[in-house]
Length: 220
Image 1 (cartoon, helix red, strand yellow):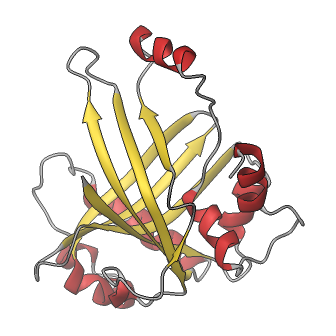
Image 2: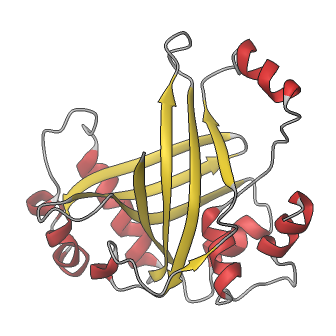
């Protein structure tokens, strides 16, 4: 089990939030992500999570947390993005894409989202991953240096957890069996949208509340 911490960015009109609420087929989230408790030399990640229908793609670049503010103010990708980490061969390009979105629409930190996660990888189906997320909590308009704070948090349905699966191709048959056995239902669940609705800061283009609508659907 580990703690996932994300600061999400959005425009002054909450364009990324509204893209999700309105169900756009192609949309994205822009965030920084760190894990667990601070250690003094923490590596965090600049992320763009893109969704195209059911497919998800990510741009991800590592940086020392202490260098984040300098990167956003100076744009010094070559000097501040960490080099030579296996699996991040495109980190400089991904960092530039992150900064492009931040600068182009003057995105600002909107909400800090925190939760605990247990993650498992299948030994049989190599591309299959299942995670259990719980204790979803958040607070609005964090500063960049507040990624690791644990105060003034609002919780969402603390007695429940969320199962997520990630896979290539088709679900393995053994998981399809579990879906049928326990009558599991597939739903769309955006932690970012849930938290903005929960703390009531989003500038919605419609009157639908994603959090209250989802809670009613699930019987929370």
